[in-house]
Amino acid sequence: MGMYGILRRASAADVARLRSDPSLVEPFLLGEPPAMVDAGPRGLLGFLLRLTPIKIQRVADTQPEGPPRWPEAAAGEELNLDKAWHGLHFLFTGTDDSEEAPACFMIAGGEDIGEDDGDQVPRLLDPAQVRDFAAFLGALTHDELRHRFDPARMTALRIYPDVIWNRPNEADELLGFLLGAFDELRTFMAAAAAAGDSVVITIS
Image 1 (cartoon, rainbow, N blue to C red):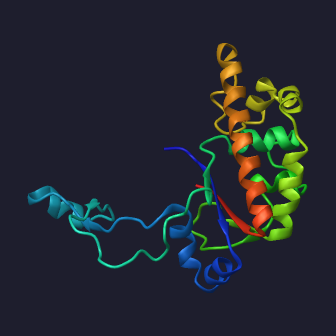
Image 2 (image 1 turned 60 degrees about the horizontal axis):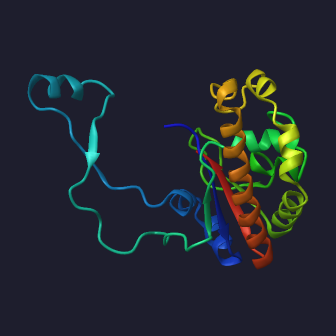
């Protein structure tokens, strides 16, 4: 599975709705989860499982009718950075956990929003923070990021996913992966800043 960095632009009306109902943040970012039904085995094994906290489920054959609680993102409103989020943070800050704004905004800063389910709580960057982050990204170049790319230090700091960086034969491919993600992030944040939008970020 893994942990993925997901960003979605949010208008002022979107933000007001998310703040009023934190349960909407997950479908806003990840889409409406499918309805599930119990699918335990029959017979003795099924009986024994009912005596334990183990629950087996499957996707229901029919899904609830009606519109989703949140419509899907339109083109350009959402960005999935895959597993590049922590590598980008390292390129921006030189650390695994800096909270110095605006360089840290990939993994820290902003307002916690949504429900705390034990994972990282989604964060909201307000329009001013979005503009600051967009300006920071716009000032960076590929050459500068290439100089900051340090697989040995990234491995030592356990930059996620830490098992991939120390592969000398794949260094160019890994750097290209991060630079491609950087270009997507810079374009996304510039568009959000130009529109005056907020951005919700989750690592999930």
